[in-house]
Image (cartoon, rainbow, N blue to C red; front, side, top):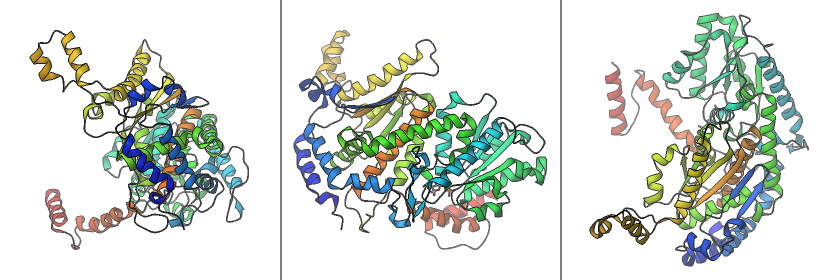
Length: 546
Ligand code: F6P
């Protein structure tokens, strides 16, 4: 029987330690230890994590590491990699790591090695990708397929969108990628109004192949294609990625053009599988495989590095320290790279769908905070929107600042300005500016004593606001793979400490169910039972649509 994490020795020590440590200022930690910035960092290939600008000392870190040991993290990591059924509520293994198991060592689920099937699908992706990119698999009218439209939602969309955008510099010259996810007709319209049916390949991506948004969008696109080219064109312009062969066939797609994945791959962990087909088509199979290689490098590190030197473990432990002790329940992700602008949205699903849970693996309601709210956006844009609150607001939001050393577009001094901003934010958030410092600064600008008095508080910054700085050499496929795997494992470690199932997503069901009951009412059928607000809203919208 697992112990409630709050009853572990390490948690109790952390609680006690927190009371004395909570007001410690990072700037003092830096002042007392000139080597702090040289001590608290970890390098792994092209990725460097500086976690020194966080509110911890050696003791804190020791207790956090003790906590990891006390919850048997090492064994749990092994259980995941070995294919044990750690997704308890769905009785499934969790093997996104098998999809990038570049050593190809066997991994068994229910006594069967999953690697041969994974390799087969990978080979099929490669063959198809090359056939499309080299113009061997053509459209119904004999034209090369150069427009890829990925139709999917959640994990069947966010990974492909994020990764293709991140790797934009590696796209084949003649290929264009579009994504349709939202059920809003505008999403379909936006894409269909820009593309040519003769050169378009639709990829329907749905693990279940029952998701109403994806299937509705897919049907609309199918009709659009048939209207333009006739029914016979469907086989040449539609492929599917799914675990559900029966439903794919029912939709009218030749199952030879279906790319399989498995129930041990969660939607939000699936971009390494055939769900990443659009990524492979855009950047080529070599780059897709480099992405798998990068993720594999992070997997090996996660599995073997001592916890004190383990990037995902350190990130997760700091996350726990803030979320459960400081009660900082929000986390910001700020990539200083325009091409990583969809990373926060991707990580939102990864983190919040995985760890937004309230019941433990031992079937009890949790009595402590679990998953944090994650948000973010690309720097420097967001410095001009929500950073005000991060610097002077009453909530403290620990940030990850992600900074590539080399830009794909070294134009003038753009990149130096970008990097200077990223580093300045970390330093400013940590150091702040006291009221006294603000007063001195104001006096240097010639302000009167009265003016200084009235302005100095507004111009002060509390500081002591934590950041991790993640420097990558350059945003390429390998590094992107590392980065994403790093966050996957961070989320995993937090889930282990909270003793929750990070791999189901039952919280999305209730809203879906209720939408299905409201839909017929909007379409004019008899009214169901609703609260007075929902009833009024249904009637109002029906009236407005008359
Ligand atoms: O909204 C929940 C969810 O199940 C996600 O976990 C998943 O990524 C998404 O819907 C799409 O599901 P599917 O791939 O089965 O269409």
